[in-house]
Amino acid sequence: MQKKSKFLIIVGARPNFVKVAPLYDELKKYKKIKPVLVHTGQHYDFDMSQVFFQELKIPTPNYNLGVGSGSHAWQTAEIMEKLEPIFLKEKPDLVIVVGDVNSTLAGALVAAKLHIRIAHIEAGLRSFDMSMPEEINRRLTDHISSFLFVTEPSGVKNLLNEGISKNKIFLVGDIMIDALIGSMSKVKKSKILEKLKLRKKEYAVLTLHRSSNVDNRDKLKEFFGIFSQIQKKTRIVFPIHPRTRKSLLSLRLGKENFSNVQIIKPLGYIDFIFLASQAKFILTDSGGIQEETTFLRVPCLTLRENTERPITIIKGTNILCGGDKKKILKYVNEITKGKYKKSQIPSLWDGKTAKRILEILVPKLIK
Ligand code: UD1
Image (cartoon, rainbow, N blue to C red):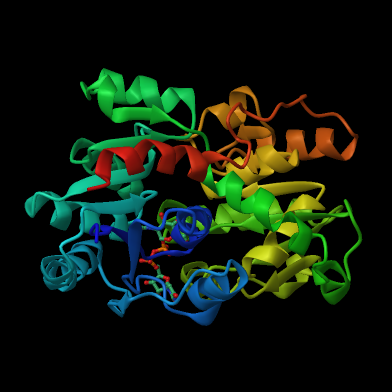
């Protein structure tokens, strides 16, 4: 009997789960591939992890490393130490890593040292800001990977500029959009608006979790000054990341200026996508949400100075605002008046990215 090829897939943090769900689905078509799923445990709360496995029907991981939170070096090293014996035992033909979190880099480093080929899904994105931990993770992962699957044309350009061979680069589109398209029928049934007593297009959604925004008290205070202005006219719904909850508690903001800000626990995938799809606009510092709002055609004001996803600005609904109060209030005002730039959905964001990825990988790896 022909031996199966083994693909070892690593996930760790919330956005990773969304990216592997469509891949897993597509892998069912390939009987000669045996997937092995490893969850590093970087995210571990029910709301940050398990709910995504349930809603997106991702199988229970074969291994859960239970690493948890810590400093970047500690977390990365701990994941590496725990992964090595698993790789040695499983002897995978390929390791698949996604996105730009610490689990991505840790998995790629262990595989590279053991001479196992790596596929990086969501390769090539660059913010050109080395103070972001994600930028370090992306760059290093790309340079040790054999198959680089890119979401948008800027990614191809970045990789070529960094001297990576064009034979390794594949523009395949955005796998997060596969997950979104695949979940639409469930999303439409979400009862989150009723639950939160909201009406379509009458509220904004806020997400904020980047360490550069939330670990700096002064910056966080400034942001909340801006949100207190916006909420005078538009209700703000704020599913709060655990990191941000901690920072916010220490700020001791007076409730009176935020009576129209609804802080809720992190939402599962289905409810979040529905909430976002029906919002008047989104304020965010997330990477993935810039893409999801572009697909959903919902205005997105990004609270960062840069983005590694320029297509969401060039073609999509995204505008970079950083922490610029004037700029944010100007665009909020325009959106409220029904004025906003026209947008398009980027090419290859069509729900078939996982299919394209496996059509490239499988013939190269099957024994
Ligand atoms: C990580 C990723 C970031 C991604 C984000 C999505 C890195 C460097 N960053 O950031 O790119 O956008 O995930 O959410 O990998 N915590 C909990 N429960 C959890 C997880 C985290 O309470 O289940 C708290 C812990 O106090 C932890 C903090 O959140 O210290 C930050 O978690 P961590 O995984 O280190 O980074 P994120 O900010 O979530």
